[in-house]
Length: 430
Image 1 (cartoon, helix red, strand yellow):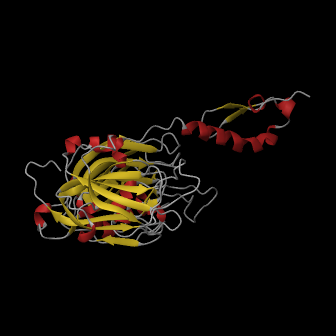
Image 2 (cartoon, rainbow, N blue to C red; image 1 turned 135 degrees about the horizontal axis):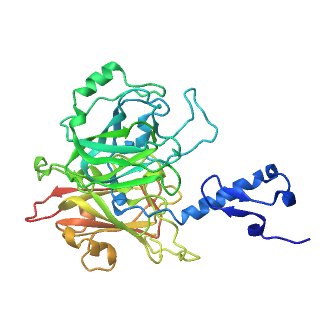
Image 3 (cartoon, rainbow, N blue to C red; image 1 turned 180 degrees about the horizontal axis):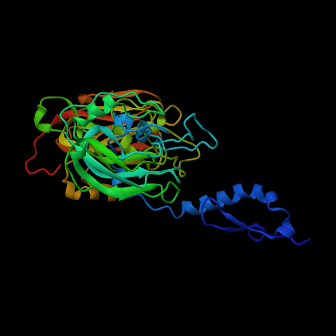
């Protein structure tokens, strides 16, 4: 008997999710017998796509100003028939449930409107959780392959006050009263920040539709237009909070690195399980996924030892660098290992420096730069706990614009707070 390799037995033509199987039916029997191989060929297809998926642009490292975990919400939607618009702002990646249907149709993890059979197009109003400047967006059409919205646009506004919450239900559309109320905003006249643009279907290599935003104004609300209808899984709005610091007294204790105050993660050594930008989000973390977590260092010693204070002797450490929302002096620090119970770091330390935005890339490129000055000395950490370090435990670091948090040897932290006072720096670009 001649033994054939997998490639000889099944010749796969990688054309898409419906992979074609070329076979000699007379030799291998009826084609129905080959259905068991379809799972294999689809797996091979997805494995190939993993290597061809295009790299995300740099702006995706910024904060998501619209995600619901920071307060983003849908204030209005013309239609929520197949799936409600609120799903756009979920923090987790969309999922697909094979064979799951509701009374309205196929269950989809996103916003999907009915097929339009009347004049007009669908749209929704989003209130950003953190108002600010938008650098780019990602329209994620994952799993919306034959039902994605073919075109979209975005308009923005800077409103003085928020809009009321809404009740969203699958299978519904906006009521006459809701349309009347929202019409008063005249959102159709808001500034267009993304012109009408085509989207790609929700396959692995085309689901992320990235668009750079060039208008650097401050926005509080967005109008997202679908032309004419369809589905979108997620909308990510990447940017930086823009706070009016003229209204903040210099003697007011403020979290200088907070996302809502304009703090920004500009670099990190590793973010395998959770992005470092999560450290500065509002509130306490809801889960481990809502914090910064690095992978285990493979070069860690086979047997660990510690010093007299219980600090482990380990080579290397992980780090992340942040630009403060405003230059200032830090007088109190909070490190929170909430939810990190078997994977918290052994210890941490924080350094600070003053550097202009034009030179901040050097802080990420060169770890051993002499620019850094100690702010928080090495501190032992433990599981699932808030640590507060007051001024007497900190080094005098002066006015700083950036900080670097280092953890040893690896692990996860959910939040970092840097409480202090703003300082006016002449000709500062921060």
